[in-house]
Image (cartoon, rainbow, N blue to C red; front, side, top):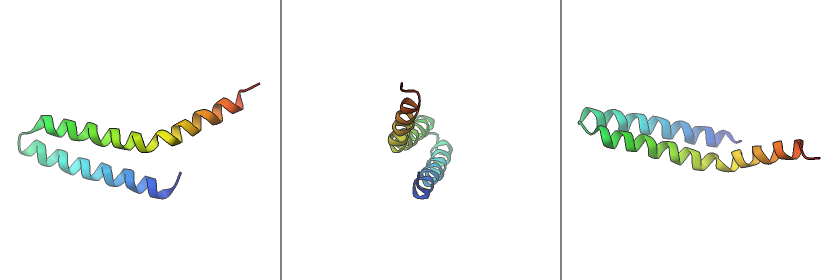
Length: 64
């Protein structure tokens, strides 16, 4: 896993947090919730290859 990915995840977290605060202050709680979900989905899409690689490694460790 590269450090670049960690910085991208942190940037998305900061951006989503700021957007949530702005949207909540303006009375748009639904949009704030959807923004948080969108940020989570984006980060999960970035992590899918690493999770897949982890499962393949575990599978090869226990293969007979």
